[in-house]
Length: 142
Image (tube, rainbow, N blue to C red; front, side, top):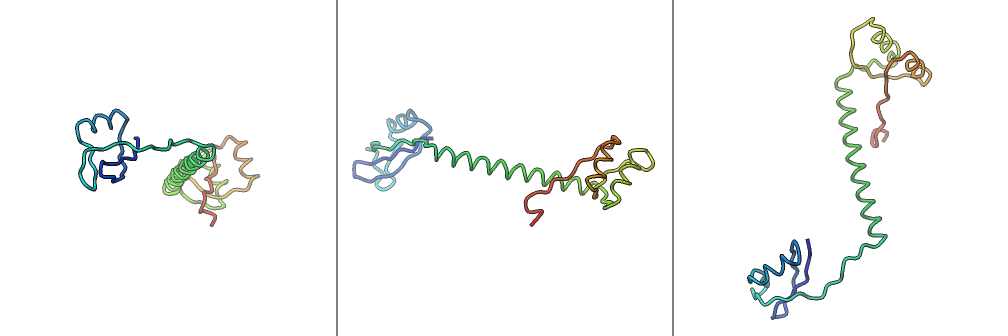
């Protein structure tokens, strides 16, 4: 989109948005561009300053994009963690024991969540038991 500063023959200044320079030219030639104040179709473009992308402006845009991507990613992770919690049994500190029982076929297969120390996690992984930590997300620790 292009924003043109426009002025009518009566001196009223206003802005117009067009998809391209050719779009403005075509609408202007057909008399479709008129002054919102007086209705005059005698319109001309005013001088306009070009939009120059400075390094600062580029960095601000990039920062906004990164922030939005971060918000979306955290939102998706929050949904995933919620689904895992809703579909798992919280066995607390009995997690290593229950994970082993499932792995060795001593109890039924089901989703588990709970706590384990670093040593317990290392031992479970060495035994070939597939586990993964749930992420701690922003706002979870506040």
